[in-house]
Image (cartoon, rainbow, N blue to C red; front, side, top):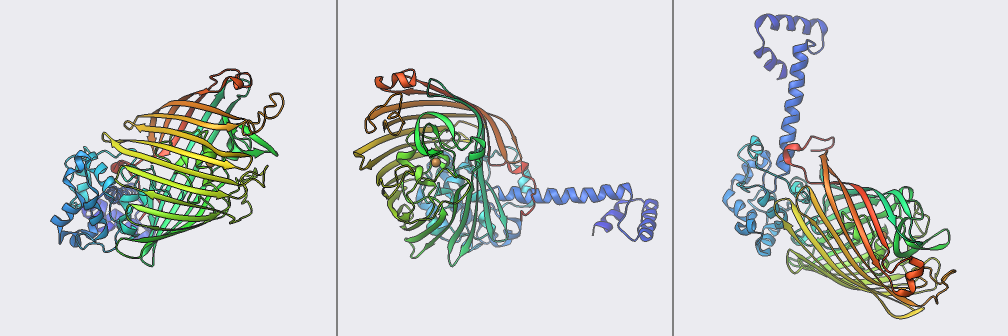
Length: 570
Ligand SMILES: [Cu+2]
């Protein structure tokens, strides 16, 4: 085909010469022109590919190959995937559920339907764009005004061809960390590929930060916090199977001792309690398999098993919270709320409807030990239960309880009871942003410190547009002298003495550049801590300050025209 097209475009003399060269060389044409033509062909293949990928990037649009089928009911399809009020951000849940539960337009039974939230953001982002099938592959080229939301991931857009089902119409987009839910109206940025019938999703963050915590208990550190996650989903027996791994190099990039963070507590290093530092995450943050399947029209079951993973306890872990994902710093209440996100041994079973989920876990309640590169011994001697409720597209609520047999390596006999409740709100902002906030309450009870030790975290992240992000977090935590190692010399306070500590952090990130599906930004954050007068001396002030400047790399959703063909993409 290529040769014919080539000869047709050449003048006769060139044609003859080229033919002779071809015959003599017994290999493809080697003239400069021919090379150029070959390059043109590659380019045109690449272009066709990028158009094809661009098509993937447009929610609600059909691939050209499916055009004929989709055409059968274009009006119905358009209606189902384009809630008229979506533009005003008022899409109701009902049409969505319908659209996700029924094959639309007869095109793809069991297809991974487009979640309305993402539909609406893409609708907003593409003025004038119709959800109806594109008239031609070139249709992708005719939308110059199109913009891609910074936060909308590509997950929802591509599953059309992989036929990974959404049990009860719940998109993978709703997944936070472990088996938690986030609001449908917002998302975590990710890149999304397909390999055969596997739906591959990657996301991750890399921070490079200079951390300066003031006062006698502070320290400075240049380091990097980072994690990467791969999720592979496949249809299995009418449900969605997913294998996951989430890895972090923190132990190398902020050292085994972690990074300086005033008033932080939890876990140990070289046999000593860590304080005023946040521990590094384990290399194996998560290695898990999950299965979700509908059993009736309205009820589904879910199973989750992990040598390293997150039991049904606490809110979405902070790295996976849309309200904190661009914030490199762990909450001071981490070990009151979401620290079980890395547990070595988890088995969770649950029942869910479209809006509710009830889960129970047996797991290893021990904090990860200080050997960060290996798997800790797997034990299943702790348990937890959690209710999750997404009443609308913009809310995700959860509440639960956990019993942990032996949390701290330094106090193996101490049992901990934990109760948590959280409310997360999220909504799109303008054409490219989203605003997510969470309120978390978490409380621990331990025999050495009877009663409940409370924590409250209020946190928010507003991605205003593709350039500007604002971060904020306010916390109140009751920590003991032992938590902060104030029961040692020189302070020697009674170990069970409890202190109310608080902090307020504000941060800003400015994106510098976008490339290859990632965005890099520069950020700064300042934290004002408040300690009681008794802690003024050890901390050097009633209001010790911590600051952080950082570069942050993470995925964003590509502008369809910027997408490049990649190996393995089909
Ligand atoms: Cu953690």
